[in-house]
Each structure stands twice: as C-alpha cells, then as structure tokens.
Image 1 (cartoon, rainbow, N blue to C red):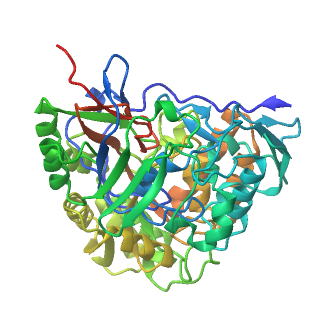
Image 2: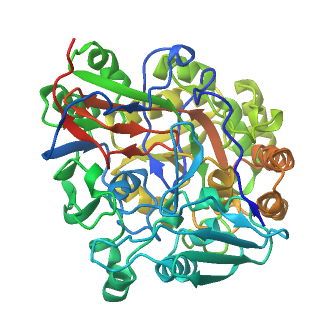
Length: 552
C-alpha cells in the first residue's frame, strides 16, 4: 500500500495576463465577476485570522450571496453558491487549504492505495455525530457514496470514477474498489462527492433531502426562504464545538453587486461574495472594510450546445444548426474573441486570459494546456464563409441578468462582431439559467466554473460523453479515452501530457470556448475575522467570529 499524495500547486494562484469573458458551464457554476487593477500586482489574501483578536462570542453573521443556491443536496447540486452554504453544514472527507493542498477533514489521513491502484482505503474520525444525533461511521460514508453513484439525477456519478464497490471495513475505515486505477480520488472527495449525509435523514427524506439537509458541520440547517435567505445555526453536537463562535449565519440573496457593496459599507451584512470592479476601489479605500483576493482554479467560457437535446447526461442528439454541426463555425467564434482586449476593457487587467480548463498554477499545466487561439477576426470570417454559414452569423447567448454580467456580455458582443458574429444577448435569472443549461435549451450560454485542484474535476464531468456536467452534449471517443486514461495514471508528468492532448482536441472542436480566469473577491467588515476564501472559490465561515476592534 502507498499513500496517495496529490502534487502541489505551482506557487501563488495569481493569473497571468489579460482575458475575456463570455460564458461557461457549471457544477460549482458561478456568475461572472468583474474586477479592477492589474492582476500581476495583486497578491493573494486568503484569510482574516482570529489570532491576536478578542472574540465576541455569539451573534448572527450575515453574508450577502450574489445568486441563490440551487438544491442543498450534495448529490445533485451544481452551484458554487450552494457550496458556500454547505461548507458550514456538510463537512467533507477531505478539504483544501490556503495553498491548495488536499488535507484530511472527516478522514484522518490521505487515502492509502494498493500496489495495483485499484483499492483505496481511508480512516475516519471517531466520536463524530451528525446534526440529528446519528453516529458518523464507515457505514454512513458507504451510504452517501453509493447514493452519489446510483441516484438517477446524480451529478457526482461521473466524478467518482469506475467504482466497483464500497465496503465498510470497520466502523472507522472505508475501502473503495475500482475497476481500474483512479488517481483523482482524494481531490474528488475534497468536493461535494466527499460530503457525507446522515443515513437516518436520507431514509426519512429520500429525494427531498435537500429541503432539510443533515450532515456533520459546525452549523445545522434552520430554514430557507426562496429568493431571500438561508439560515443555519450552531450545532451543539459538532465534534469541534468549542471552536464555533457564532450563534447563526444568515445567507441573504442580494444579486445586485452595488447593493451588496452598499450593505457591506453600512454594516447590514458582514461578508459579501463576488465584489464588482465598479465597487472595489471604494471598498478598498473604506477603513472599515477589507477584501480577500485569491487566484482561481476555475475559468469562464462560452458553452456551445452541440448535442444536448434531451438534458444533461442523456446520449447526445443532433442539432441542425451550423454552430452545432460544423466545428469551423465554433473555431471562428473562438478566433473572433479578443481575449486580451476584453480583459483590459472590462477587467482593467485584473483577470487573465484562459484558453483551457487547466490553471497555469496547476502542476498539470503544460505548453499544450496554456496554448491560446490567436485573435483573428478576418480569419474568423473566412472560416464562416468556408463553412457556408451566413455572415454575419446570428446567435443568441443566454447570460445571467446581473449588471456586471450584462456589461461583460455587451463587450463580448462588440468583440466578436468584427469576426462576423451577430450575438443577441438574452438575460435569464441565475437559478433559471442553471435549469436552461441542464435541459439544453440554448445555443450559446454564459456561466462560470469555480475550479478544482485536480484537472479531472475541471474536465471529465464537462467533456466526457454523457457525464453529469456535459452541458454542451459533446462526444468524442478520443477525448473520452484520454480523460479515462489520465485518471488511471499516477505520474503527474504523464497525466499532464494526456490532459494537454485533451486541450488540443477540445480547442479544435470548441464545445466550450474558454475565455478568462478570474480572481475570487470577497468583502468583509473589520468587526469579523476567521473568514477565508481559497482557490476553489468557496467562502469559508465555519470558524468565523465577531471580534473587538483591533488596537492601533
């Protein structure tokens, strides 16, 4: 047996040079962020420490969310904003730290892997209970993983790899058997697939688990008021209750970035996600407000519907439009985008171009994964003419209906016009856009993926045939084979080379046209500390607290 030790990220998670924005895909899907100031000058600030601060125990912390979470169910959810809320309620087997390294959470050690790579075992914490009093043990872990694998509408099934069986070896040890080796298992269990649900609650609630989720966490679910708020309260059964300081957290839905910023300055909210460019300078100048900032492992992109006719996960169908049937039209769209100019004009160089799903900070980054199509509007027009498509080529792009996203969409619209595209912007409310994406009711779509530490989490579920987040309906046997092979390989350099081959093929087919890589911007007032935001985009509040004013 050997310990599975994931490779480390390469230095700071700060993007590198300009980029665009248009749209994307999901499974931690997020809306576009805009920002101000050169990315090269921005240092990562991942947390506000409690060290040296005087804690005021209790109180209700209010966090402003830029969009409403989807269902609070680890098996089926696909929104970044759901991950914010679940972070306080549903701990995972593993997590990532500020450096992007995988660390144990409900497990006590990194997984042990057999010599043939097909058996994975990991030990669990003892003396832990779910919020309903049910003991946390290996049987509970087995129940949750098997639900991820078997639930008809599961978004986790394709993330977990070719599992042949899950065994509770003892109360505190779990064994997962694989048909073939699966290298990304620790990274997968550091996301929603690693959130363990109370088997008692699952038996009682079934498909309605997300209406009142019960897990292991510093807080437990209280209520949800649709389109308005979600409230959680301190869980007295939590195993580390002495380090939980707040009485409750209220997640308030405030979709307008300027209103979030105003509420932050007034103190009506204490934390706010997705700070806008329009408000960043004023917030940074405010003596009572701070901003966490960290580079992202995710990306923004345009998702083209090439075969999603019967909903995500169904076999690809035929869509009789030039952009769906002819890769030359999609390539022309990619060439028509001036990524660097969009970053300069919309983001003031704070963000960076991203032409693939692999961050340059990843140990799996290669020249192939960092290659970017040249901006060539005349070449784009020539490709459209070669494909026999109308010039200008008219297409609808569905986007979220927030001011920042609409500004971005208008910039994209103007950018691709010179390359022969006439884009009509169709604003849609965020939660509705998630449904549109799943159902395949779009030609071109704009959303963002918050990113994972292992490329498998940014690629397999979106690009392999029939996978849970393959919203484009893309299917290529060679890409399927490469992604499957990459997941079986332990050597990072070999895996990186395989992922580079995938990127090369995807840039030829362009079911997803990658555009830019954001920086996660989280605002907070100086009366709170213990807040952190890491490269996976999740704002962590479980151990935050109100604090006395700092001396000085």
